[in-house]
Image (cartoon, rainbow, N blue to C red; front, side, top):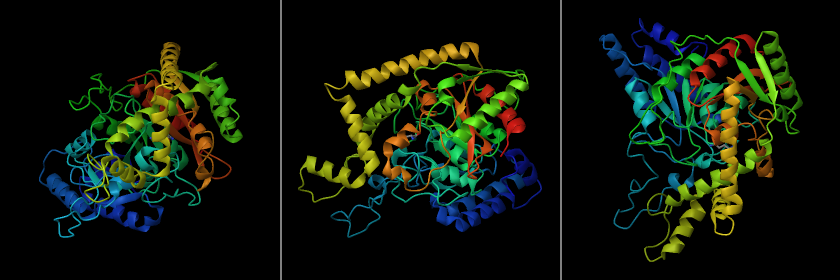
Length: 496
Ligand code: GLN
């Protein structure tokens, strides 16, 4: 019922409906209950979202002016801070309830997990435009992963086939939109965590330009890559949410003051834009043959319709994943040092325990296997003796990628590439071969290394019945072109 409508259509229908927002919230709450087994949500703000809906209904009936996201039901990934609500990055280190401390009479409300003491900028902006936040979504621990199996709250299931993963790390947010448990959700994309689950779930996933959306109140994984992204069912809605959550912020100096051209009022005056694709990306041995064929077919159709689509050489392709995993883990090892049981996180042991033992205990118990693996890898590549060989080298690769990307966008409007080399994996595959899972990030991490915006569009269906997408990237701060192209591709070339 809500899936086929745009936000604008929904808001128009609300105009004459006394309990419109309340009914919408109740509809989604029922669906969340029906699909509880998918494990997409960590916490659902049931009473609170009904209250907010009632207030918003009253606001409309009283003729007050309404925000751009009036009545829109949104879910947040569990890495986005919402004041007075729990947030844990799906990690035991923030989720865990420490034993009652001396003097609290066993009152376990003291130190029960971590509750956010402030709103992230995106939450402030959503609320200021009258959105309704319905709950927070499951994800991979500290946003590290591609399957949503690394979570202290258990795995999330793909609603289209429950034996498959939804992708990660924003798997819960993706399934929340896929199974229509909300209208829009936010995730975070450090190396593909919005685009890859969007691909696996058959929905749209946008990673904006690095510096478009404030990271204030986003739990950091790798700060020079992290960017909040949007899941939705149509471009119009995704564009509207981007308009709301983007923009300068005193709390995040990496956010640019470059104006975001509005998709809704832009004219699509470049209908036959120029696409580049990387020849070796399509010839890559890891790419599923049917995905390859579908993308090649799309290229043929685009050419037949007058688009210029050119294959270019991109010899840095095989360096992308190693550079990402060196730099992202290095940043993670530093970012996650704050979870020491003192400043943040779970603490165990008696007051006499020595400091090092206390840190060790907290971090050994609090972090999961994948997070530990990455902290160790990141610490290693930053350690003296290895720094030059790994960290510096990876930084150099990043610089080359940025330079090459600039050159590409001198000649082309967009890059067209698969989102993921294969469709959604079976549950349990990642555990057997984490390196293979890392290598599957080959098409997504490029946009994070270079900071450009990228989107996954659900155009195709595999013969195994699972969806897959195509990924489009545009130049930095050129989301409007990206959204215009996406709109056209979804209208004219969707075969699923
Ligand atoms: N698969 C990537 C990783 O595990 C995705 C991370 C992300 O975008 N948060 O690092």
